[in-house]
Amino acid sequence: MDIAPPVTLEEWNAVGADYLPGLLGMRFAKVEPDQAVATLAVRRALRAWNGYLHAGT
Image (cartoon, rainbow, N blue to C red; front, side):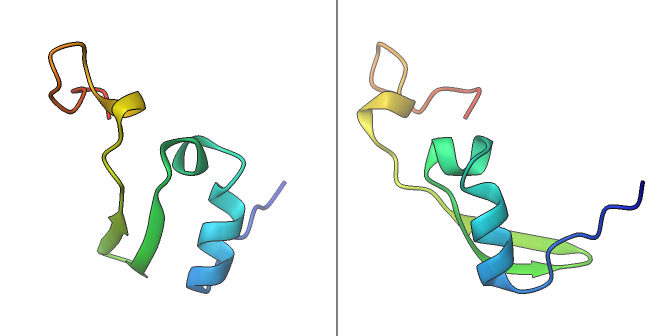
């Protein structure tokens, strides 16, 4: 089974919406063969009990 990766930023963001990127609130801003850039709003749900961004994020 061949799976074609998304091509446009809109496709990357749409495909990720139902998976971990969507759960974390990530939005891809740039995707190239050697680099991906995404934004992530740091919110309480992503922080550890001490207020720091959770290392697993």
